[in-house]
Image 1: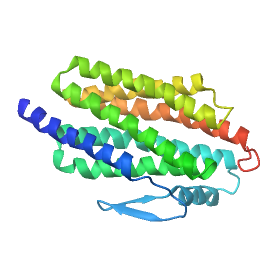
Image 2: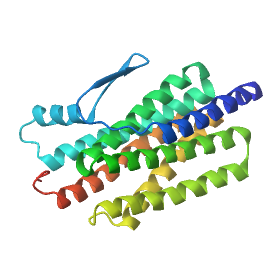
Image 3: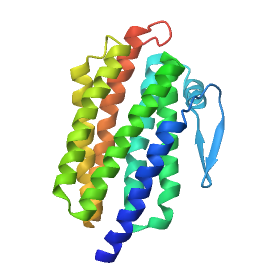
Image 4: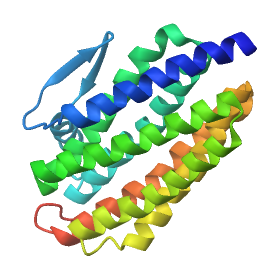
Length: 239
């Protein structure tokens, strides 16, 4: 067990360095439907997903399509984050590939925001979203090392992130109150942390049950975001 933890600390620290480099030097803007393949996994862009949703059911409204898209992307985020943490702790050889796909999900979410609010908002969202993944990395490293102070610091940073994320969305959309968004994002943190703890502690049953709970909560965030955007742009997203 000690040998695994030493290896894991090095692997996860490598993610911190990679995440920082990505966040600072590689802004991502998605402007047209493309398909990207990484580690033999194909992901579908926001524009393609929206087209598929609208084509699948002509009766599906614009706001319902947006809600479905955001729900899928946010729930995917939770499961991909769980897989990345699991690989960092248990299967380091697969970690880089899982982290790369997790970042593709971040880019897809940012593209969804950019499709509504433009390229600048997309870039700002991507940097902010990546930062909270980095905070979860910090928490995981501290948990592996048994560093209580480090865990508390990362938890505090995540709480502040929830406030910052709420302020970001409130600044873009008056129908998304900062406190309400911060509360939803804070609950995302509270539901995902137990999954991270369980993965690091080797409690598989609790880990996967916690991931399911955390993924289920993301539909609440998607509902709030879609409703707020539909209220702001009723012609583009009729309900």
